[in-house]
Length: 74
Image 1 (cartoon, helix red, strand yellow):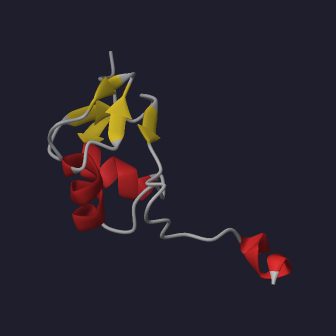
Image 2 (cartoon, rainbow, N blue to C red):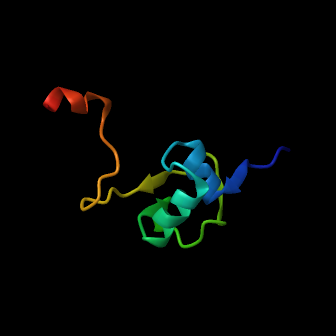
Image 3 (tube, one colour):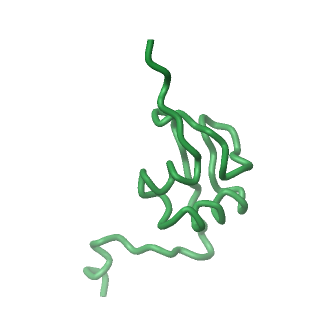
């Protein structure tokens, strides 16, 4: 029987393109903005299943991303 695929949370955030780098992922986790399966993530090294639901809460005060359609607003 094959094991469930698991990886570090910071690496999984990068793989899913929810963070730019593992360092950025660590910052998101430290800021309390990442949850896995509804539970707040506390450590970047936490092992998570690659199929686990991961949510990054946006920071309303510091949006560091603009959608591709953002240029249409100008």
